[in-house]
Image 1 (cartoon, one colour):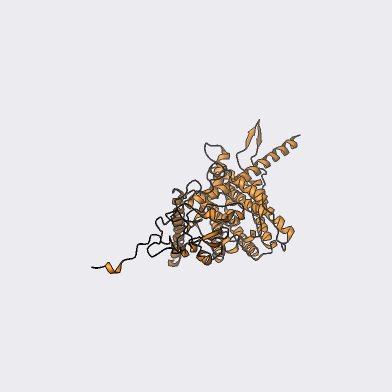
Image 2: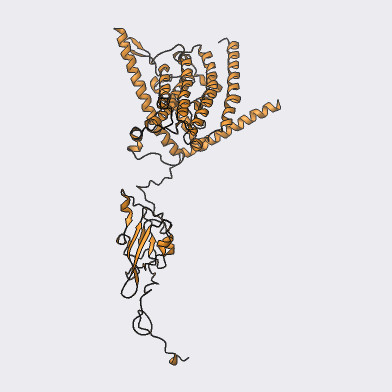
Length: 184
Length: 330
């Protein structure tokens, strides 16, 4: 008799367990959906989310890129190709800069590798296209007229520019200190 | 002259029943997706038309336009015909279901059932067993491991649960004293059988869930383990037929539950057709709720439930019902 009772108790427990789970789902039926309906509602993405790649300029409007090939070298899908060139003053720049977005995986390693913070990823991810060739972005498509995420960054402004003239005559260079008059 | 009128009437009833059934099946898919969405705190389809109401249409067009692919090693003829079996069987079952009170036009009583078979329930049970052929043959003819495993599971499961389903209906027949579905509805004039036979009802409900291959008994399909089970290799409208078959059989099982346990079209005040449709929809809605709630059973749990629990309980229920009926002199 005792065993029989435990069988009934087990059955009751099982039924109660089922009823509980049904109650939980029923409760959820009357909750407001938490869906963000994407094309109607576009969530503001974080500034550092990784989407379409841009080439930024420094605060004075010059190209930041010095065509060092680091981004191209680090790219795991080899989707960046560059040909570097030199200006008259020795500053390097990319003659052409091409990213094949059909191959890009938006890993952001180019951004990490870039010493001048020229190449940057933007939160823009909505650029689907019908033709695969339309994903070839040339330098003029990539280059933007702003500083991207680093508005004041200008460290390599004169990197690689050849020195002309005497000491202290280079761009932004202060005249040398006269050691003989440098008395306490 | 009268037989032509009868033929016209019959064809009209057939057309109405089949189109209503397919319409309900198509919108059942939408209702299921909507409700599942709500159960999971999301919206479900709401892009095609207002509230996603044109979604079934879009799905249908998509399925028809898709390629009808037959694997090279498949048994071609069987592969092509198997989905039709699954889709046709539940349709044929509707032939014996009374869906409303008799209609009287100009003194002539028109029975609102396509055919009142005096062995209606046996017909239903026989056809319900036939549905397994579609699954077994489709899975076997695909010549794929996943399909075969799904088909084996499907046949084992359907045969096991067919048994308890049939036994759960025996008390209903004992109480009604007839196999005819019309007579069964008439026998519930005072009291629906769910109040007299709650155990039978629960067994029938569980078996019906297993018969329609739905969660928690969707082992033949089990998309996580077997890709798609018996319909892994199917595409396009042939897959669609399996799909439609599942939903039509859900509705038909709802209608059968209504007839056997909920008193069929009987109900106060409102027209009888309304009551019938309302009762019919209860079971599919409960199935959807179940799908949102329960996980899939393991294969041995499924067999355990069928053979060691439902079957003995159904047998005991028959004996008890018989005893009580004898005692009360029914």
